[in-house]
Length: 371
Image (cartoon, rainbow, N blue to C red):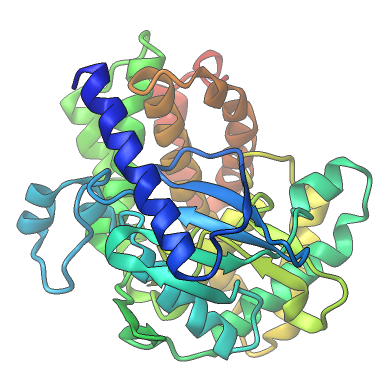
């Protein structure tokens, strides 16, 4: 695409955004762009003349491959692309609106939706503020009550029977399962992309076959245990501290549009194997204890076995994504997060039940490549 054509599309999108804001009573707002992430979404803060601030979400259509149709076969998902394989929402605003409504119905602090045009990827949301867990902890605030609140919120999510379809305010979205196809897509990222970043590595067909054999029973456990609502991106950069609220509502939730039914260990791994900040072994242990206190009937031994196995899969998935971001997408800053992830992987591999994966890693990914 030439620059002139690209500029024209940008100008058209800006006009569409301005018209949407005007039509919904936000035309007088002062607009301030907010920093982005690795997604194709963009956000602005709207400052209304009344003094109220809001959030403006912009997810341009057609920047993502299609999401997964609920009845798609594995072959159809492979043909559709990565979002369908991984069961990602492709940034769809109707997914965000419907999921936000379900979360609020269950006493959780997702943003109110003040206006939305899902087909065009636009929405105006309640502004939950800037007190992200990550920023507060960086500035010296006590992390203990935040992580306690995050565990309470997870327990609230896990207490509910997740519906097959989320529906709210005219928007609906299927709540699919983190199935074996999606889990295999996750673990395959590592063996595909790490050698492109660490060019001294090469995984032979035999090594890949052994890798798949190690993961097959873990994927089966993960898929069989996909019984709870899963936020899917549940970490300190997506959680906002709202201490004026009570209980699980103290945790403001962001970036939940990719929600699925999944094993309850998945979001726990996202929270405690946080790629962007150090979660100490002590904080991890305290959070797990709190979860068990709030779920006294849980089989702790089985949960911990699944947490270490699916946690290892999740960490390796993120390592693969970061390797892809660095090599394919020219985003070198993600390499700085990788040493922390290797440390989390070591914690998971310390479980004797993970001896097979530990042996594979020791043979094919030497310590000097884990940096």
